[in-house]
Length: 346
Image (cartoon, rainbow, N blue to C red; front, side, top):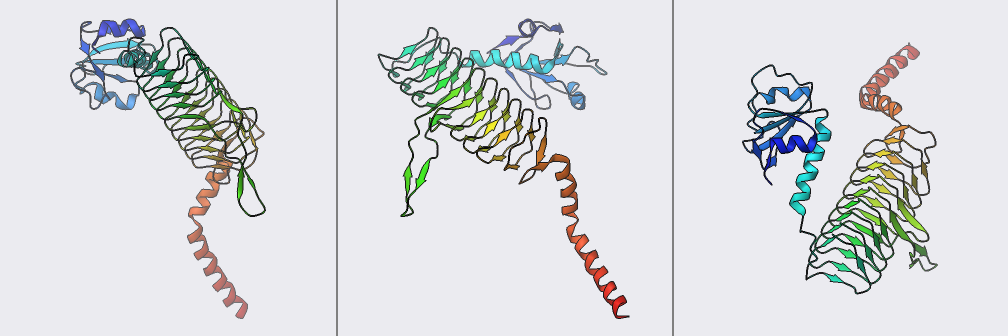
């Protein structure tokens, strides 16, 4: 996609300093950008690159005052990060549009419904009773099971699996190979030490404006629903077990595991590889550092946790400082014990 400085300024509500006809085809980091690239500066630590970058267009905040000559055409905006997100969304939409086509190689059951303006890629399967909303982008090799519901303006990238009866809201994004509605992990122990599978007959509900990363798995409930509330953002390679509830606008990083029937509140932030025990509740606005293990409920909002088992963030930092000094402390204790023994035998 080729786009000019004047067009970019119009899209993001900015102003142009320089050639409005300067054209670019792609974006790049400011330190490596070349001719034909657009880039951005929003951190003063990188300002030196503004004077050396080979980019054709440079996005800056309105407050930016150049101390040296800047070669690229400058576009000024009130908020560079927001403007960049707007610009990248426009480029992404242009790159991924198939002209609202339904591939001849897709299978859509005669009793399924697909809304106007929705694109369906090759080898996608939409089963009986499924309903897909308007203006969706369904990439190749997606599976949408029996009686599943997909809202409007939702994007399903290649290999996404939506199992029977599950619901996906409006304006959602599910990245490649996400699996929604596989069986929860339910087995009953038997006297002979074997396990009997407990049928998982519930579903998954994903509300509006949710983004789910590649290869993330959200299990269907044993009874009732596993629920991802509106605005939640889940990274790649996350496991959400049966009957879990993730609150509004919560953000969960990669490789997090949430055991069954745990309820995570609104606006919670969990770092990568954090783990949650089952049947606990996490208060709103809790912050959980990477690799922390949360084994009990968090009842006080805005708590910050670290460690495994997780403890108060500041307590963990203090404890970790002591932990690093343990060899030295042990040496000092042994020396004191020797001196004490000499005094006692004196």
